[in-house]
Length: 392
Image (cartoon, rainbow, N blue to C red):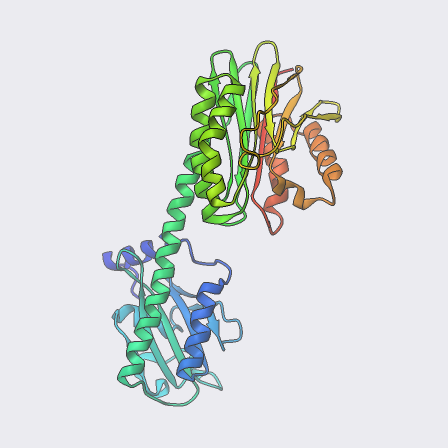
């Protein structure tokens, strides 16, 4: 079986496949469902969604192939479908010269029947195949061929959705600071790790003269609905707090967001603070967030007070403005509740963060150490970490 890798068309095809960011990803129900249905509807031994890279086949979904994940492109039967870019139906693969030498044909229990329909990326490039295989020769009638094409269309729509989600992830990341903040007196760093492709957490900061403002918010829920609400909330909170004193800004933000949140049946916890970079004076509003700490260099800590309920819970609420002082060497750490999922209770989570602070020489290091918990586990909720450290 000839492998084509050098033509401009093949290079464009492989680029399109890689742009989907689907190679070597875990199994997903939206693809597994299609192959299960295909296997049952056509009454075949197995069905699979195979993606063809430069020199290999990656099986994104399969039913009846005993967990197959990888095969060489030389062995791949679907590579022939990709190269032809048309439906390929082979009544008896054992007698077909195009498959000579494939381990799927030379195996003790060889594939006899093969049918593959090409799968295209949103740009039209052929990236894989939805295929059917059986252990005895057979054919597909015209109705079955149309049905296989329709099922391939289902997979293509999922591939397009995956690309759209990737772009949405990029946009969401652009809404948050892309690099840390460092001045002679303070440094800030943050990281947001969605449980899904998109999340409802966000963080932000801005410098306003001799003050730096930081913000962490957590929208109830996960995924696309939470992400859309988060984008709206960020725009409103950033706009109101940029031009108003904190109490007035919170009142204006609540007035704008409450109708939206009520209609969506959601709420937002948020922590917003302003630090005077020279004096260390800190004023803040904690709207139902409850996860803001000041960590001392010696490993001790204090938790900041609540100002009232989350946005969207109690109409016309007036949130208390609290004050504190961030002493030289101290760090304001704010996390979302996803961080708590990696510990037995709040006390353990806080103690761990305080201990990590003694190891971190910068705000960026502290954020990385705290974020490692979310990276090393199967996250059930969005996890956000923000650190604002005052120079010693």
